[in-house]
Image 1 (cartoon, rainbow, N blue to C red):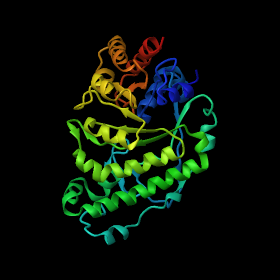
Image 2: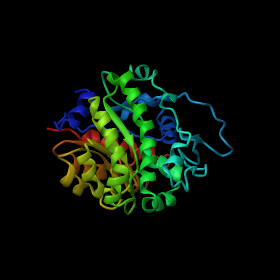
Image 3: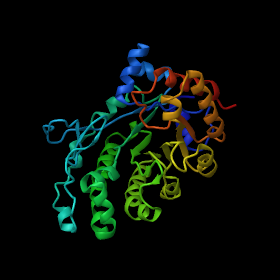
Length: 350
């Protein structure tokens, strides 16, 4: 069975030959792992048995000189600083808006700034063998936070709910059209629509279920419907504890959830498997912090990985991976390799 077949069988509710494997990695960890193993990125992915590859549209919009200390700039004009995508450096430009007219007057980005023409070439080496992730990441929740300010956003829920709804709509308009452009041009090269928004914190959801249904779920439903319209299963990356929101996500049509932090409130693997394991694909649950970063030895990691497989593997619809979408640089390489060795050893279906 190819990686593509293995993954798509899992999304179809069929039992594959073995549990699919997901190697999400930060650039910093990847560089360290390449240096440690002497392998290049593709060699490392093959070594761990990664069943996925990913393709991207590329920004071709107006060029901007980053300010001092900034490391990245979003399509909405927000500069960020720090590790990875970091934290917002730009003052929130829509803080204090209270009318639809003010929202419409903002300089919204053009979806055509994202160049989709390179995707077929990116996908070509992997098209027949691996499950290819694509579509725009679409972090509309994070962008609205950056545009309004996080505290201000919560005030707007009560002070200007219709205005806040319109901001979500305009941000989602951009991402929906970018992904539509991607699927129109290169849909045959993509197997799974992969999107990301962090709706949970360590102690639970960042909004009540009622607020989630009004302000966040409509955008998610638009993206899910878009993916399904092109025949793609839709998988959401979401950090934190958000168990209370999962029934609404399932009702909206989500096909898979990725990351699944077992140390966050409500995200215990056995409970997730019991309640949702027959309805959607669950991807993750191997603790990135306690097991992979702080695990005292590779043998400890192997045993903890085996325990997670024992819970999550039965019945299928499970993808084995760390509980963070990107393995961080501080993670010992030998622990990550031990995790995948354990998945290899214990992840076969009879």
